[in-house]
Length: 201
Ligand code: AMP
Image 1 (cartoon, protein in one colour):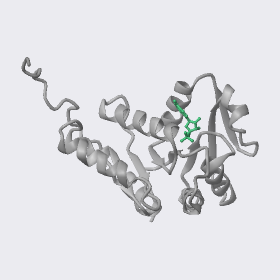
Image 2 (cartoon, rainbow, N blue to C red):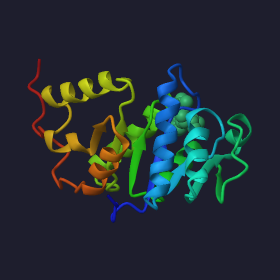
Image 3 (tube, helix red, strand yellow):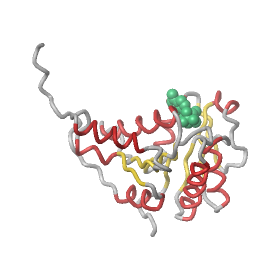
């Protein structure tokens, strides 16, 4: 199935490969799939960890890839030397902003704190209406099951509006995830659940 509304996706993922080889396999599958669907891959520009795997897979499948990396990380994360397009930006904030501006959706593979920072910045900015970028989490081998459970809890506990729950989609299959992101429409709802201040204690 093609994805007419997805022209580019920003992929956030670990700068490490992780312990389970399933993470690497998923990154490879996603990179290949994105390229086959004619979607541009926007990613962090490194050649290490899952970042390198997803970029190499997209390139091997003939895909278009844009890397966005900071000057400082260009050394530490061993920047990818074979990209058709690489932008070097001064700051981490600028990197995230540029990546998300160049994409119609975010896809998150397994990763660490940097990956989650990137996911939640993109998701909260969609909540706030700063941009309209759906986020899709690829749950490989149950890695993100606790995150999914927490998000459902946050809705139940009224910290996340229910109409914003689908800003972060979860799937264990990359095809299904891309389809869900392509079909996503903004809820248009208000971020604020309860405007009334809490009663004094
Ligand atoms: P990690 O998931 O920690 O391996 O990091 C994945 C990516 O996120 C790497 O490209 C890191 O450079 C990046 N990253 C790490 N910390 C931050 C941060 N505070 N803000 C933005 N990106 C970050």
